[in-house]
Length: 421
Image 1 (cartoon, rainbow, N blue to C red):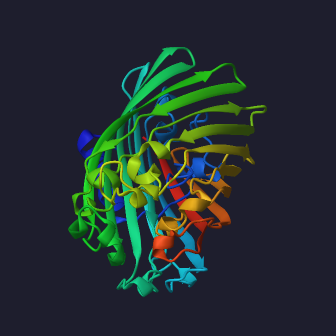
Image 2: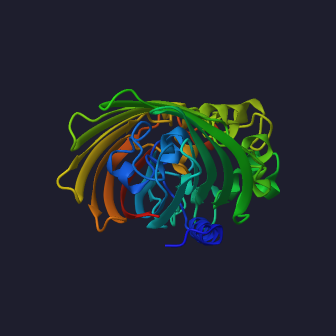
């Protein structure tokens, strides 16, 4: 099969167009993906020290060192179940609200790997990094005078060229330059414009785009035939502002992607069995529009202002474990589990009716069939049971008091296709 730069560029462009045309709504580890690559997703997202395909560069850029030329394409069907219950409110908000006006979502991903020499390997990955979507056809804020559907739609795509260098046998370092394309839309929250520094750029402005850049570095080491380890650090992805929502997000529409970092270990106790475990930290609180609490609003700091109110998200630590077993030379099965801390405090549920990224447990299964010497097909499924955060002092007296309880559950399944070039 020809692997000319023109062909690869065409494939990458097609993947990028498909990714941007999709409508990511994942809200797993907060609003980050719980895993990348069909194989990794089948193992609960564990993969920092266990590279299985080209998407491994997203987990750890060093882990692709020594990988043969290959192309990986994947697609995921994602079905979230999100909503809110409001009680004890003196302004007429009480009720149960279903945020599932938009479902399901299609999430593509793409990876290309090519060795440049015995020690140096290049990769290009394009993937949805994170996002959030709610669509309340019955508007929770209607008694305040809100009109139309209420909700938000955040989508983020990473385009990451990567270089990995094997500096000693079995040990490598890697670096990715990360380009960010993100889009955001908010609707149906008109009554809150009175609390904005820029009411004309607060809600119902359509989808706005923002661009940014950052980097990811990693280390991968094979200690012996049984044990491998890995670690990564991803910088803040610095992005320009959402101008159409400069009156909603803190710092005049700022919405950077938070710093994350983690480490992993993989064990290969037999020729057929592999085990992997990761731990990861995501620092949501360092991004003002995400981490600032609602409280500054009642100290005279409006939405959209410098250090203005946000969604009040905490930093989270995420644990992932997974296993795969080669049933035969052509068939492998997988299972995994991921556990994420909940980023939404009980005191911050009111604004998070729009962004209830509160699932914590992820159960996954998967399998790969080696269709030929060069072609493999992988399937996976994920279930995140419903998690509810019950509000405590969550609705300010200024808005009638009472409590907002938010919930989220998720189901997804997908396919990945790998081709050795």
